[in-house]
Length: 493
Image (cartoon, rainbow, N blue to C red; front, side, top):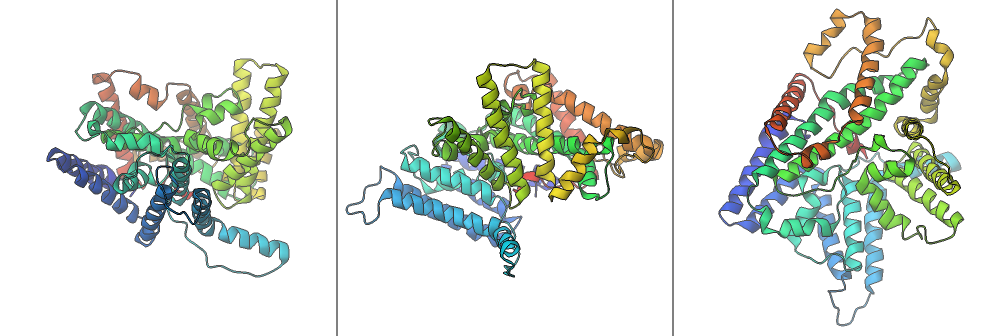
């Protein structure tokens, strides 16, 4: 059950909403919170009941450890220092994550280096384990620093499991959520929040179903082919993934924010028009913002941040982004992607220190092209796959080659069966080349406009907004019913 499925939209979300506010209305406030926890666990268990005990056990253990390391908790004769308990708690979380996410990766690399034949049965990555592990490590550190003031188990369980963010973020801080879960202002229906929530949810649904899932067809075809790509096809492949990833993940975050807002809970914004960035530092202030602040606060700053010599600062940046790349998955391709971004941040700092500046349009183009270039490594399964796409992107001579052709477009996501009929109307050569190009042009136009958060918050609620909400929702819903929507990309990370 994903946010873009009819089961979630018409069954799960309304049921959770009405029961929660009904319990609050009859003054069963604690029962309402408990209902949200149970409903969130059911949402998680829909994917795999087998990993529910792992999630519940992780929540229970981290709550106990977090309370133990808090300065507000006093031991008469502590046998172990709070710092030792904190380190042990972080280690347990990281070891658990490493086992499920990286065990086979390390064994495969060890076999390659040493020639051994060690084997571990292929592990299925528990859904959302990276997100709820990082969220709880932040809670442990904040508890130790006396930044987490509230220790109620139901509230904590709700903080970790709240279904809008449980599977793929945003990564939350305890202090930014507890006041909301405790506030009596959130227990009654706020119709303005419901309308804003539905509006941003509709934008996210449209992004996912109509835009991201369309680009997915061309991106998958290009990366999975194995055949050499000509110039047009290679750029179509790379740009399609660049836009698929953005509209897919930002669409998820919009739906998460919208669903949470219906319950009067504000989740932190996770995307702020990242493809408008004028340099790579600006990009990381706008892209996956909760991960960026997490890496800054819990990795970069403890390493020394920028409070050290220049060479050490550059090393800190590289370590942070290499590990940030590895966080996305057990693959050297993610490490390469992280190293490229770390290197770009080092170059960006040196460029700023030189005092030189680029015209705005050149700064934007350089940043966007670099991000697009590095996404190739992020998406490719091997260096050979990445090299094949990158070679085509620089193979200008293939533009006029007779063998050059477009990517397969045997199915369009947008418009469901209606737009699939375009294949019957248009010549295949036209559909194969012009459909992706027109979609890329449309995506470039869209990213230059106001983002979903600005449209939702910084504009009044009127009939015009309601009309657009209904239009976007209806179009996306029609396509959802007509075709099977893919899962969100970040479920894999």
